[in-house]
Amino acid sequence: MEQKFDYIIIGAGSAGCTLANRLSEMADANILLLEAGGKDRNPWIHIPVGYLYCIGNPNVDWCFNTVREPGLNGRSLGYPRGKVLGGCSSINGMIYMRGQANDYDQWRQSGCSNWGWDDVLPFFKKSEDYYRGADELHGEGGEWRVEQARVRWEILEAFQDAAEQAGIPKVPDFNRGTNEGSSYFDVNQKRGIRWNTSKAFLRPALDRKNLEVRTNAHVRRLIIADGRVTGVEYERGGNIETVYANRETVLSAGSVGSPQILELSGIGRGDILQQYGIEQAVDSPQVGENLQDHLQLRCAFKVSGIRTLNEKASSLFGKASIALEYLFNQSGPMSMAPSQLGIFTRSDASFETPNLQYHVQPLSLEKFGEPVHPFPAFTASVCNLRPQSRGSIHITSPDHTEQPAIAPNYLSADADKKVAADSIRLTRKIASQPALSPYAPEEFKPGPAYDSEEDLIRAAGDIGTTIFHPVGTCRMGADPASVVDPELRLRGLDGLRIADASIMPTIVSGNTNSPTIMIAEKAAAMIKASATQ
Image 1: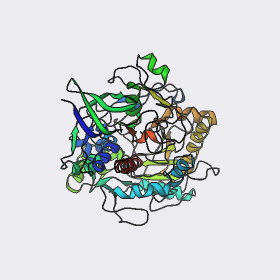
Image 2: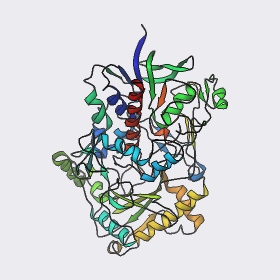
Image 3: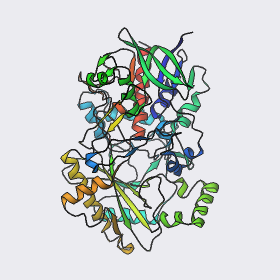
Image 4: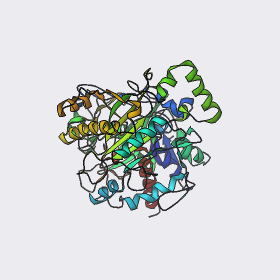
């Protein structure tokens, strides 16, 4: 028997869970939510420090890798993406960040009407439950809990003081349209426990009889008939199943999954589709293009005479005390987001708004998942918020289980190389301020031997790594070449919208998870409006 739903949502990540909640508010519509991963039952998902054990775990992470990147001196990077209810909100750094008002105003100025800061702010506020309460810029009582970090470190306070001495002011809130300055990050936690979109949006909606969730359902392709997306074909438990949408299908598989599913369905560049024997349904050359990501440079410094997490986490006694603190109080290092102190500033005075973001941590390690170093140290990771480099994501096979080719093309633009070199110099300037001098900071990544412009660009290639913010591969725009229009409708076919980070024309100046939830909120409002017309 043919299975029909009014709406089918592909992907139960940050956007998909939000959409499932909002669309299921329509009592006269039935909704199917498909997720390739399983349920969010792994306990490490819910303990904040557990991201270390989720990233690289194939039960909850797609475990993607980039191609070897010339800008990273031939290195390939791990590219974590959530494969579980809640998607990336189940394995990310939990930082609540909107970006800058100017980001969205530029979207609007480029032709994406109704996507300016004053257009999107109500959608940020709609789902927000802000710990300080509601005001003109924050919401209260929504599903998306925002709290203060539950731990402070003297070394981070010293770094913040040093930044102030270098001309960067302290601010109380990064989410008021401008984020310039330094502060501890607000986090998506509830009393020291990760607050993912599965808990926030999906679970409260599961009591509604018009919402069905199918996990371990890996989408193979969209079904297209008579110029319209009419359904979805997916694999579950070794069987191929087909479902049909009476009204709309919404693709929310993320910046990697959404272009992959489009191409597998014959929507994309002709040469790529032909290469893999896929019949072209829509010529959409921008599918999979316009990839943007935040590349962080992890500058690390040894210190003395001050406590860091390295020495505490390196001993058996220290590990036991950390565990007990979390067990009894849901505080301490196990409640920490990957980064605690944030700084937004400019690499030089020519930038109108901050173009750099720091994630400062009271620890150091070679890479995520590896043990911390045995000596006291801190890490000041800095990223270019608005890179000019553009990459791509394209299929490598007609098989939906094969990983696509992820090519961010980091540091390919000369402007990005300059910002990278300048950001390392700025980090050294902050570290040299009087507030840090009692602790004798000694740079060991990249190291003081890297000094010239050429040296620093090479160092950026050696130490640069993603902070997991891919966007842009199904670009929204008013121009005919864009993948979706400002209503998020696919150009060339009826019945399909895309609602996730892939639609961003340009990357926002900060962490991308909460902007993705905003996009889903706005998409839901558009879909509801269409249903009443």
